[in-house]
Length: 458
Image 1: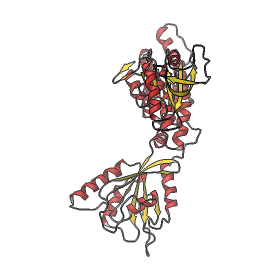
Image 2 (image 1 turned 180 degrees about the horizontal axis):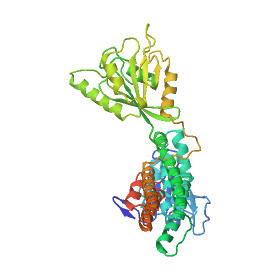
Image 3 (image 1 turned 90 degrees about the horizontal axis):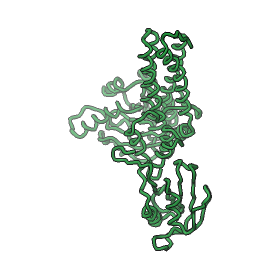
Image 4 (image 1 turned 90 degrees about the vertical axis):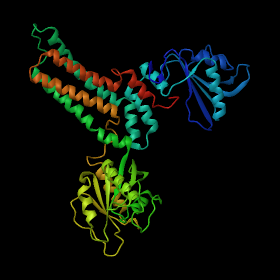
């Protein structure tokens, strides 16, 4: 396969260091392709011509002059019983960067080429060891940053999402066969099922596909994390609240208004989710150029955030700018935080926002309640269970959306007594969309774009 800057040649024997760079106890050099065993035989101090699959052999990797490069364990995986579905050899050498690179260089010297990013996984996909959803799950598993995303990646790796999509496909194939029969034998009056029954079944299927599609909201939170933006007027305690939530001094805290003039961003964990916490410039009327730019960025951050924490000063009456912010914030994804409750006389007031919490960022009183409130707003529809299959990949979401749209056209065609030729065209389009998820109907450019994001050696 050749596409863009990435070139995958199935006939080549490929190699790469499969372990992370740096020093460690062991480094693994992976070799895969039809000549993997013969190549390994040339560099190993023991004959591998009659080597058994999945048995470890101890010996030396030698250079062209027969001098030892390193003492290694060599593991052949033959006859398609490997990750890639090809003959594969793993060389387990000592883990120093220099020694592993010398072993790799010897493998290349004997005829292997360096693998492209993701090429081992790509070969596993080509050889039917996994579908595209499972291949993508490998990278998600490696890059998982929380327990939720790890569970979601594991579900996809063992094929749970794939089986769900295949179940949709099977039901569509059954209906498509009837439609094709109506097209091919119009005079026969074939009635495998009535139009009404087919519409009922396809509408039920469309609803099931829509239920899976709706999981993407939670899936995106699991996969990408949640962005939370702190907004408010100057000196309401946004920076102090950020430091308290992070449990470290990240933002500068002073009594001088306008200390924060740019966006400050930090990451934290909250109940298993990755959070990108952003502190913004205090919003007020000003003619100072730098501060105005900071305020403009604050407004943009508020629009882009998954959740907004609007911080108000409970120790003083509401100011005009406070009222303006109360009108501007997105009420469905905002938590009102009454800060400075440690100050004598501080009190909360009735406002038209559904979620509010009273805290003292200085003493950290109320922070646990704030964390609980944030969690409840994020999971407003309920946190997905560990056993639930969720969409986490935008590519899957878009393909499923297109499939649902095509299926809707099929139902509309049946209900309006459209000619079966047009209906079957929409049915094929729906099947193609589902095939794109699993990788059966997908272009080489898209495949290259997907696998090029993988690690080298994976």
